[in-house]
Image 1 (spheres, one colour):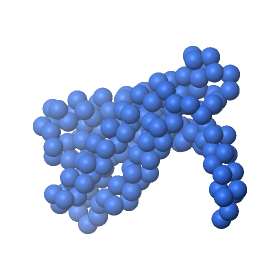
Image 2 (spheres, one colour; image 1 turned 180 degrees about the vertical axis):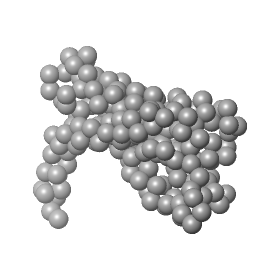
Image 3 (cartoon, rainbow, N blue to C red; image 1 turned 90 degrees about the vertical axis):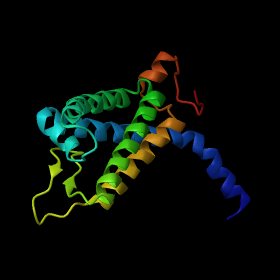
Length: 174
């Protein structure tokens, strides 16, 4: 690769980065909105899914399970509209790390559960095998999306940009 082609790619990054960021923002919003919507209709089941991890008491698990879908929906809406994007991405990173740690914890303790990430989880029926590795890899992908927005929160068509009076997306960080 020549120096010229390398430098031209580098020069294009400020132009394409905001549009990649928009795709990332919409993707992460879809993740949170789908996860929250799948659980919000049955908060008791969401609590049972949290309880299946055997980390908290049943009462604490029920509260976490009832609150989690609303937190996911709120994160989804904030990321979708691009409001407080860096903060929302930071909360997303933290929450995804908790989810990954929970799945790893269940796996290492030999629990046989469904994570409940996109619906009703809990203990698996006898003969069913958990799919921990794919769940961890999926969440690592979501973590990468949130990490991108944590580093580069400015994207087109965001409330953040509108509030800051940005007419065009520029490659600048907060």
